Amino acid sequence: MTTPVLPAPPLLAGGRGPLSALTLQVIGAGRRGTGAHEELLRLAGARAADRGPVLEDDDVQLALFLLYGLYYGWLGALGDDLEWDLELLQVRQLFERLHEAELRELAGTVPAPEPTARSVAQALFDLTAADDGPSLARYVARRATTEQALELLALRSIYTLREADAHSWAIPRLTGRAKAALVEIQADEYGSGHPGSMHSVLFATTMRGVGLDDTYPAYLDHAPAVVLASHNTMSLLGLHHRLRGAVVGHLAAFEMTSSIPNRYYRDGFARLGYGEEVTRYFAEHVEADAVHEQIAAHDLAGALAEQDPSLVGDIMFGAASSLAMDALVGRHVLTAWEDGRSSLRRPLTAGPV
Amino acid sequence: MPQARPSVTITAYPDGPLVVRGDVDLRTVDGEPIPHRDGPVALCRCGLSRIKPFCDSTHKRSSFRAD
Image 1 (tube, chains in turn blue, green):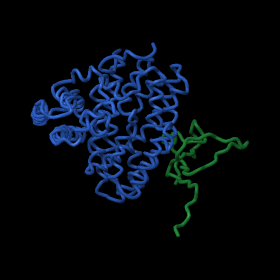
Image 2: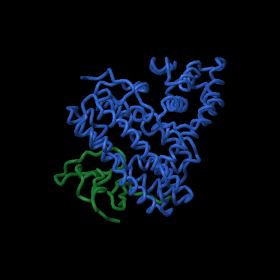
Image 3: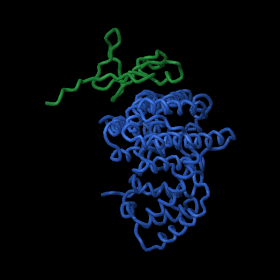
Image 4: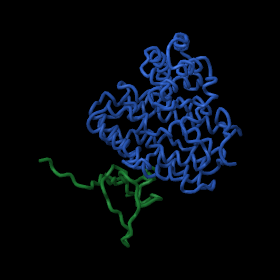
């Protein structure tokens, strides 16, 4: 018997505005006939015509996150009837257009390297080195309180309890060397045949080790728009063949900005007194991502550029969008912490003091 | 007949680590096994890693260059 996994009650109760509330209503009903479908499509159309920014819009990002949830399966049986619902696909597309347009603007123009593996790998390493992003990681290493460290895990759980899934959408969309390279990275993410070594499982152990709930998506209601936008970006890129260059670039930048920050996270959790059970996830990523960034730069992105030189621009766009979303999330969290506030929509109640 | 593949490959990534793929037996000079992760392993060749013999990407913050 399959038990539908319902989102936490506060989420089901409200949404974050009319779009997400209606999306919840449609998904919660799991069938047609409530009138919510038509109303959602109408409101989404109006929101699309309005063209206002969406990356920090809680209502749009939650609605889009829920719509993508239909494909990841965490909505359980509730989502099955609606997975290929034509009206929900229309709604999703309206939000995606706004999201992609703003993402392209935010990512800016990145010079396209020559379409050789060597040049593309170098350009990706240069782009990510110039970003110098681990300020959030440095903060955790040196200054974060236990409560802040737990907030970080709660925020990261939106992606990391599902680590690697968003980029796996790209596997059937690639061929040849690039496909083999993506599968090599993803196989490693999924534990190289050992379920207990799956990165999502290691992260769940970390969450339990600090007293957090590792069910998915327990902290959805806590997660601010930018965190959902960050995950929606991956889903958007991964679920479109048109954007296969971008999802590859996204993964490359993701891997390239992971190894060194994870060392800081490990140091931070160790400083706060947590043992190996909690820090193992981070230590594993220091090592794993030092491997993955090489494969992603040369064998995945580099090879894809050689297979199809027309994708070089989108590879760089995907990399830049990964950095841009990381910067948005980092700025959100650090601003809140430096103001003495929680970075979550509501503070955590779980976890040791 | 397809050509037999070597059981272990070592790839030198430009300005980066040596990536070892396959079933490899890492040992200390005393013959003690060095525990390592499942999947491919990156070995430091810039000398700066804090987790030697493994790479931790520190080379990116150095002027290490190698083909």
